Amino acid sequence: MTVYQATASAPVNIACIKYWGKRDTKLILPTNSSLSVTLDQDHLRSTTTSRADPAFTEDRLWLNGKVDEIKEGGRLATCIREMKRLRKEEVEDKNPNEPKLSTYKVHICSYNNFPTAAGLASSASGFAALVSSLAHLYQLPVSPSTLSLISRQGSGSACRSLFGGFVAWQMGSDPSGSDSLAIQIAPQSHWPDMHALICVVSDDKKGTSSTSGMQRTVETSALLQHRINNVVPQRMKDIEKAILEKDFDTFARITMADSNQFHAVALDTEPPIFYMNDVSRAIVAVVVEYNRISVEAGKGYKAAYTYDAGPNAVIYAPERNMKEIIELIVSYFPQEGGSFKDVFGLFGSGQLVAKVPSGFNENVAKRFGVGAVKGLIHTRVGDGPRKLGEEEALLNAEGFPKNLT
Ligand SMILES: Nc1ncnc2c1ncn2[C@@H]1O[C@H](COP(=O)(O)OP(=O)(O)OP(=O)(O)O)[C@@H](O)[C@H]1O
Ligand SMILES: C[C@@](O)(CCOP(=O)(O)OP(=O)(O)O)CC(=O)O
Image 1 (cartoon, rainbow, N blue to C red):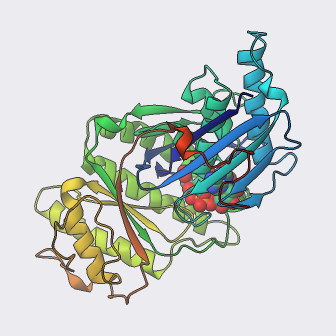
Image 2 (image 1 turned 90 degrees about the vertical axis):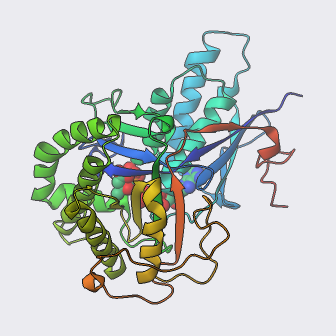
């Protein structure tokens, strides 16, 4: 008997121009366009296996080994329904010989190789991997932009994880959402020198979810209206140009300004929302001082911080600056000996030693103890979703998670 099964992995993306606010909460249509960098799935990824079988009695999902309920009318159910619709319209209706997979129930098993719901964009890679694995299962002849229309309905930011490199989510204007999709601005190969350092300040589940936080902002913040109407449209154009020209200085200025404005609209919400904490703010101060030395020497910005809906920092920088940045960060936020994974071999066989660059004003932030920054992940711009082989499937012969009995 034929087994209909496919496995895919998908990357995380971290926005430089933030999505914050919906004009349609059911279809997940944003109040502004946004733009992100896709991170390397060799380091952070969601992997998902999907199988369709006439013997299955219901659509089921296991996330990190535990059953995740597919609520009727919920986001997961919407994505699965929309993928089945595409299978029917794009494959089965056009070729009656194709098996009617759209009528079978599916079993889906997914695994994130990093903390889920901790502000590390697990919903983005998670829904992108779900949609990608179903697209392979159903052999859909559709573009990543079309798939982004569906992953968007799982979690808005997930639409940007359908591409590698530098990706824009165009807000669109059609009330049906048909033009609210992701496009690639430039592939990974355009600017492979773009690296990222994730400073994990907390890997706990967060207090105010993005979904509820942004809705409160839409309802109560006057500053959000200014951002949507007068700030983001120009920033989208400027950052796209900076990316195409590999102009890190402009990229960094816009990225930091947009992170700051996103956290300002969170604070402008009633009641106010705080995502950054003292450790986050100290990282800002350290990056600002690091850039000051370089700007005063006429060399422009060397690093850009950005924060999502949580205290973790992501620092974008050209690869050549990363060694210095890591040495600087660990001098303010010491790491447990040997805990940093030097995946790019920056320190050779030597030890990572705390060091501040010459001319750096060490009083810009206090020095924290071990544990304030719980981990550092050095990664870089990466590619889009990957189709994986049978040997990486997460479902066993019977179509249940391999690690469960
Ligand atoms: N691999 C996955 N497959 C399917 N759904 C997933 C997967 N990973 C995460 N999710 C969904 O995303 C939810 C977590 O999203 P949430 O927005 O709370 O956190 P986050 O994505 O880590 O943070 P943020 O989006 O603010 O950066 C999970 O509870 C689950 O419903
Ligand atoms: C701060 C952000 O990370 C917000 C992400 O919000 P989500 O995509 O998690 O929200 P929902 O669409 O409600 O699922 C900014 C961004 O990624 O652009």
